[in-house]
Length: 423
Ligand SMILES: [Zn+2]
Image 1 (cartoon, rainbow, N blue to C red):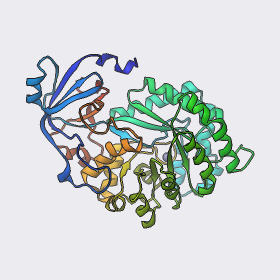
Image 2: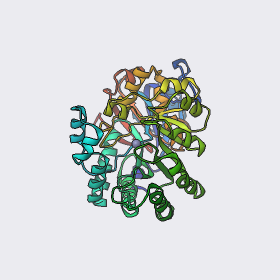
Image 3: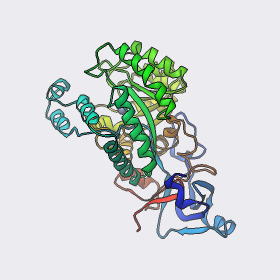
Image 4: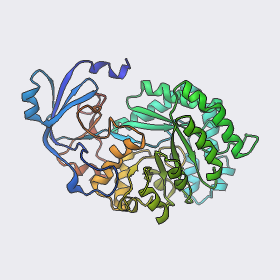
């Protein structure tokens, strides 16, 4: 059994009373949401057994039923929401890009930064120089930081190795980090991040080599069941990615796409391949918004990249109004999105895009879970994982009102209290 579950073995615990529990139940996966749709359990309690929730209701009624439960009694005002899900990050990397950030803000172009030794290639170089053990350590450190901010599930991409062996090093590091990290890490293979400078061949030849030599090892070692590609003028074109995704699909991988970040095109590929999500979308026009809204692909906004680069946000309001499913993720990476604070970024996206509290919370809970094909979290329900973010307040609206500055006072992961500010 995984060490992170051990202290929760065979123990029934009633937590409460919470001033409010926001279970995120009864809401549709797609479309706009208003706050009157949000269900709120007042004076609530949650009963946990091992890593799962077995009951939710009012604290007093649960106390009367579960008379033998250990009671984790809360004093003062607390609000409980599902642990957040960050469905798009690049937190496994070597080095720092602080100099890029300074240069970009001082007016340097992408090309000037690349010429001075910066840009994504710098991260590739630093990641290749890092040992697997160093990557394990740094990934755990960032994952645990996110956990303290209420994020209990974190997607983590490869994509800074860009050779078969270096991509494997990253994905093995993520797999090992997942054992130690307090949050769950969901790995994604992003070998199709960019054509590496030292590859002697075309984009198509590179992708062909990756699909032939890397994909079988991913399955054999269970390193990832998700394949991502950066579709952009500076990375890979839709035509180049097509055969790569076809092989991935045939082998049973889920597809996700870095789409429409600077130019629209990737979201069409995502939809054609029934990708589980299309992420970025800052450059999506009404045409792409309409296509996404009428597809099964989750549209993931990455406000952290807009804040990091000083670019427009994805058209989140339009996506929701057109009937799309909107997830919100941090894109935490050393280059364009160094902050990595999901709650802050989601709150800010809410003010710029005029999203309701319910839409923002949905975007970082059950709608983000859907972007990772996970049905056991992002919602507080009987049988679901006991992943809880608890805030010291009496009103759930305070969570987004404080724009990320109100941090959780407790985080429960798989039924264990893994972070407690009270102690
Ligand atoms: Zn990304």
